[in-house]
Image 1 (cartoon, chains in turn green, brown):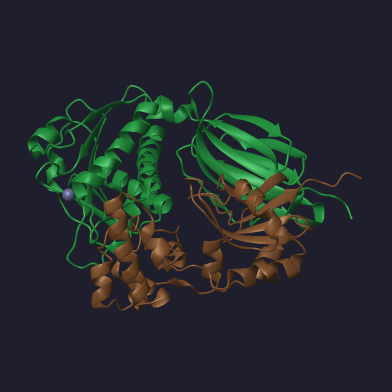
Image 2 (cartoon, rainbow over the protein chains, first blue to last red):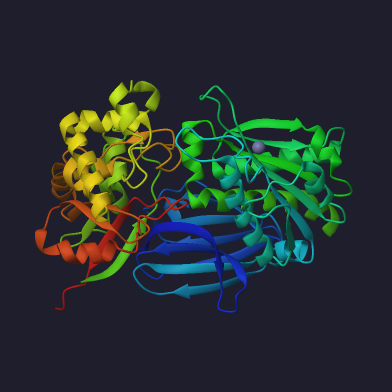
Length: 299
Length: 213
Ligand SMILES: [Zn+2]
C-alpha cells in the first residue's frame, strides 16, 4: 500500500508576526510532508492542490475576518488530490511556508494591509451604553448591560488600535453622560458605534440587532451587512435591523447602534461570558464596515 | 513520549453519530497499535444523547435556590443545570457540596464543592458553555467513558483516552485504556489540541515514536 499523506486539519486565525504585524494565517496539516500546487486564478482567490487523502471533514471553513471569507474543499479520490479554494474578501497577498513534522503543515500568511489601510488614521467613536448608576438591562444570572458593553468596547478599541485607528470612548467606566454629549463626540469622526444589549420581559427572546439613523438608505444597507456578519460569525440569531431616532443626533458620520445579544435570555447571557464572543463580534462589525465602505471608496 | 500530536478536523458530532465508528473513520490509516486516540469528553457525551435542552427540564424550588449558591466556579448557574446536577448525583451530595463550598470559602479554599458533590458535576457544561450548535444545551458528562475507550481500542487497535481539557491547561482524564500512558497523555493534551472556538478537532491522534529496527 502506498504511503500517501493523510490530510488531517485546516484552520485559520488572526496572528501576529515577529514584527508585530497582523496576518490571517491559514494552515493545512497532514501526517507527512506533501506536495502542493499554489495558484491564483484571480486577485480574490487562491487555489491549493494537495496530493494526499482526506481523513478530515471536508466541509467549508468559514472565516470572514475581513481578509479571508472562506475555504471550500473538493476531494478528488481518483487522482488522490484535494483541492482547497481560498476565497478572499480583499485582494490580500500571501506568503507561503512549509514545516515538516508530525503534523506537516502548509501555511499561508495573508497580509491584512487592505483592512489596515482602510482603518489607519480613521477616527472611530465607541459608545458603551449606560454606565454609573444606570446598569441597563440585567441578565437572569447576574450580568449587567453596562458592564458587558464596556467589555465589548474594550475589545473594539483593542482591534481598532491595532489597525491604526484613533479611538474615542464616550464615557469612562463608571460614568453615564447624557446622550447629547455622547452623540456630540461623533462630530468629525469616521464612524460612531453605540453598544447595547437588548432586554425583554419574555426570557425566550434572544439575538442581536443593528439600529440605524432613520431615513438613511445608506445606513440601512450598512446595518443589514453588519448584522449578517454578526450572525454568521458569532452564531447569535439576528433579531433584525431597526431605525432609531436617537442615532439621527449623531451628525456627519455613519452611526450604528449594536444590540450585541438579548441579555435577558439565559443563553445570550451565558454567551457574554465567553471572551471569544466579544472578539468575534468586534471583528464581524469591523469587517462588515470595511467590506461595505472599503470597496466603494477603495477603487 | 509521543512523536506527534495530530488534531483531526471532524464534522459536528450529534446524537446520530456512533462515537466508535466516528473515531475509526477519522483515524483510519493514521493510528495503529501503541498510538493513542484522544477524544474530547463533550463529543462523547453529545453522541450519547447527553446534550439536553433546558426547556425540557423542570427545575424544582431547590434547584432555583441552589443555582444562586456561589463558589461553583461560575457553572451550574442556571436552574436547569442545577436540576440536572441534583438528578445526576442526588440531593444529599449536592447539599453536602454546598456545605463544603461554604466551609472552603471561610478557609480560603476553592474547589470543595466538586470534591464533595462529585467530579461528574464538574463535567456538566452549563448553557452557552459549549460551541454552536450546542450553545443552547446543557451537556452532561459522558456515560461509561471507560467502556467507550475500550470499544475504540477494540475497533482500531490503538489505545484510547477520553479527556476534558480547558484553555488553562487543566487536563482531566476520564478514561484511558493503558494506565502506563497516563502522565504522557496528560502532558500531550495540556496545550488543548482539541482546540477552542473555531477549531473543530475533538479527535486527536498521539503518535508514538517509531520503533528503532
Ligand atoms: Zn441599553
